[in-house]
Length: 599
Image (cartoon, rainbow, N blue to C red; front, top):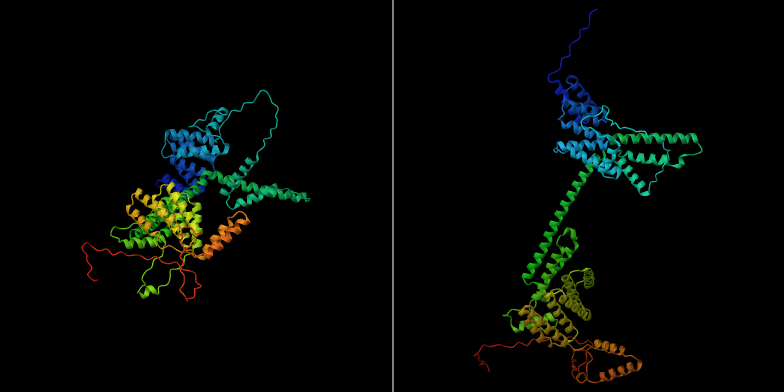
């Protein structure tokens, strides 16, 4: 018979490199089975190719063929003893094989020989963290215990199957086995359940819910019923399904350890934290820019001596800055303090007078700031005469806001500002007693905190409260005190304005109203202790009302009542008396040598 013609198999050009690169490409595509076949073909033509051995070892490790992976790494180490990549693959394979102590030893040995790239360092850190998480002890204690129980491990040689040999010594004395039951505390049991659920969620994803259900079903006592055979089959089905899911979880865990599974999450958390910090930084920069813009607007209004717009801009700026959280606006307290200082300067700027200002203009400003009405010439401008009044301000809402700010305030400048605003607002709504209380409190607070600007403003506001109560002597004393403080603090122009206010404070006195006088009389009567004294006081007030006003003593403090009798046959008006405006007396000043010939 003729023999079949067999063609001699000839290798292609550079066959080892071709199949090795094919295996590397398939390994990058995570097709490990095909990659192992490619490496086998490369090693069929050259059994001493170290790079093919290392590639097949890495592919087998990723495909969970740990014994073959360790065998290939050991063969590569025999061919090239100085090749540390084989040692690194061996250490990583031992870790994935759950031989954490051996992996730690191999990693430490390779780390002494090569530090960069940090492959050995990463493997040693992961092994050490895993040992610490599993045992709750440091790796040094575990390694000491392992060294006592097993002989030292050779770093360069390994068995064919990758199993560490340990010498088992049998004791001569056979001790009686005593069963020991170790009780697990509730905290440890809860911790183990949490770890189990974490591992299931990481590796099984949606199938983790199936594992939870099967575990609860297998442990449920209601599964046992009168149908013994059916209960047994149902329990066996639950057990087998749970075993399959646990096996799948273990395979996935061997392919990808927990630290590798949690690495993307840590990277995502790091990116999210970085993005959050960047967003917070951008928000902080924007809020600082907006706050600076509000402060600059208020400063411009102050420099233009427009007090009303300055106060409106400052109030708006404080409201906007107060809404921003402290973590989004660094230096929030300093920005608010700058606004408080600008407001204090704006109120004090009203009391600064120039040397070129005439005496009449000084007195007019003093009348306006003290709240004493003055007479003026009617306007000839039709627009001014038909101009609608300013919109009314919601005083109650503003008072509630200021009282809440006073409760929450912590800095001296903020408390002085809030107290000053409360006193000023109480004066606007004609609540003299409350305004006097807040002004006195602001004065004491600014004196204790050494706030000179607010002390001068509060002193002037207190004098205005006394004038509103017709208490002119107290107002004069307060103004004299303010003039002394202004001179001591180095404000001569403010001191001269206080002196002008002292001269003006006794002018334009207001007569007491009948309703106010009756209220005062009732208050005095209520202070009496017994009924006899009350009746005597009422009789005295009735006798006093019969005496003309110019000849009787007034019980209102600091007021001189005006007895303006009506004309002879003119009917008295039913309207109450109005406050008489003060008239400015302008003194004509002439230069020396002036003579008036118009006689």
